[in-house]
Length: 90
Image (cartoon, rainbow, N blue to C red):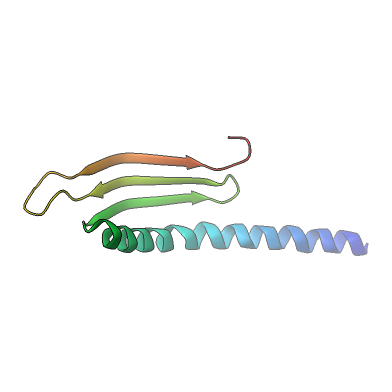
């Protein structure tokens, strides 16, 4: 019975880490990526939405926009969606 309790605690811990990553990674990644990329590139970087699925190691960025040269209304880069799959199966 001790092993069953340990397995239950391990599963509960894994689910808790997944839930925390699912809730915490998107807002943290969005704010840090926008701030740091803007500083590195010297241009405004905007990210519309970040979705992260830790159980699949799947990251999706939507509406990514890097501003063009100062005075230009055209963006240097504009992506509707960027999908990153870092699972072992990919």
